[in-house]
Amino acid sequence: MLLRLPLYPFLLTLYFVFFVFYENLGEAFLGETIRPLIILLVVTGLLLLLFTRIFRNADKAALVSALLLTLIFTQPILEEIAPAAIRQRPAMLLLLEIVVLLTIAVPTLRVLKKWPVFNQRLNLTIGLLLLLSIYRIGDYARSDEGAIFEANRLRSTVAAEVIRRPEGDLPNIYFIQLDAYTRADTLKDYFGYDNSEFINYLEETGFLVAHNSSANYHLTNFAVPTLLNYKYMADENGMTEEICKGLLGGSATRLSTIVLQQHSRSWDTELSRFDRIQNIS
Image (cartoon, rainbow, N blue to C red; front, side):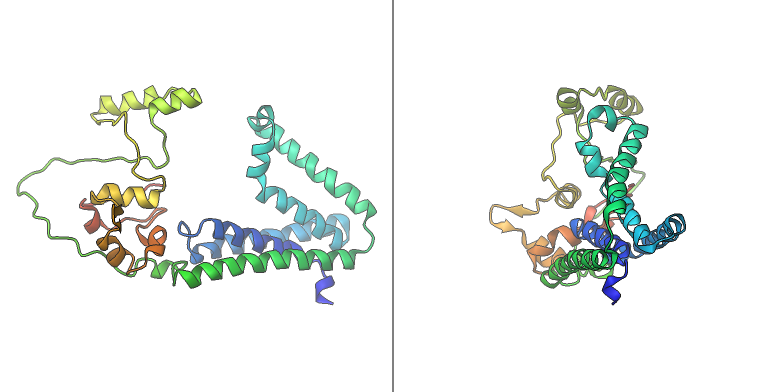
């Protein structure tokens, strides 16, 4: 009997949250899903109440709410497939979303009669997708013990050698690394964007800009520790002993999740050799 109730909007919200969490494992941690999950479940409930008052039918309200939530959650995909003329105009994109919503919702609301059966099928389908996401997250956690929990992601540290700093007044050195920021010549050659104003401002301010720089790795989790520790994550013999036994506790599979701390957190200043490192995101 419970399966015949329109529960699928809530299941859909849970599915999208856990799906996004799985796609960002190593960048996000389980505790970080609680707040958005609660907010989205409350929003889902409010949508159901709103559309129930409009349609005076909980089944129809659930369908419209689910369609609206799907459009919201899949907006990046819609932006990708939309023509450039629409994509560059937010108002046109919003109008396109409304058209898509009405195109699906209106015929379905008119034709559909067996709501209990429809609810049951959608509940089962979305419920299975949700269980699949939870299983994938659990499987990741099983192979990478505790890596999805923020408290456990940095279980050991590398014993950095003692560094003797020169005495006296030393100059302040500001090293700025823009994550995923393409250098000026690539921006101009491939994207037609002139970034000279920003580069000139840095140079006029006194910064030394590495015009021909390139990353050692294509992932932030690899590139930043390599840069700050002056050491590659691996040599010709594979993973370095310091990385595997220190940061990874002997497991190379945990590299991408506990090498560094991201998203408004600070890296281990002892490992970096810098007095203070600020991550701005």
